[in-house]
Image 1 (cartoon, rainbow, N blue to C red):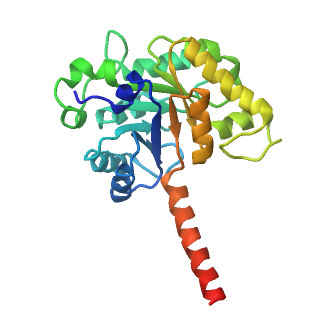
Image 2 (cartoon, helix red, strand yellow):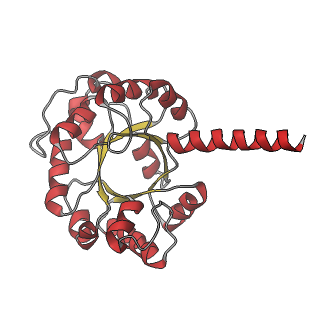
Image 3 (cartoon, one colour):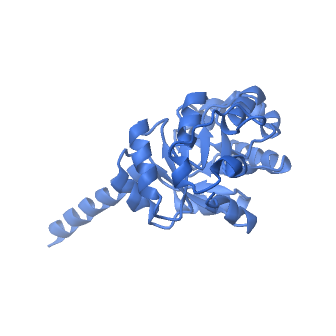
Length: 260
């Protein structure tokens, strides 16, 4: 089985820079994969990507050296197993609130006797290389998202779930869950109570011997998160990058026209 760049970087003590795909297009996925990310996550929860589009996107990024991940829509065995069978090297699952749900998630990513994953890696047999059946359990990553008040209360039991590789913080939902609507929506939290909550989850994960990832809205905050000790940081997604670049181009052109 082809090695995971994520695991290779972690073995070297280095952080992983993760890209995020919400646009259902193989060509844009291919472009993103060539920009220097270590991993790329295809978003089936909030993106506009369906299963067939996801497969094409996985095929498009295969030519690069990035490790493909998928955020599944929910804690659902079919969604998790199909993403892995299609060639994802790991899944990020939203709204995991307790150890029982975390254990369910782990079971869907591991073959018996360690889990309940059904065998049928239709595309992964080709895309991941030889001996997939024998090596998948050691290479496939399983991330539980911590993004609710209940999950925060149960963080110690979640991170101690056997077989869980890491937790992934969704700061927007976590802020909403912990504070209600006191603060505006967004990724890069600066409120002291939210910074403390994020760092608490990070510390609990590392104490349990697993990894921690954080969804970031900008490069400066991502670099700060690496300084805190995060193992994986997600940079702005394809939608935000496209909108930002297009908006800046239009604004700059209008400014030049007006000044000329």
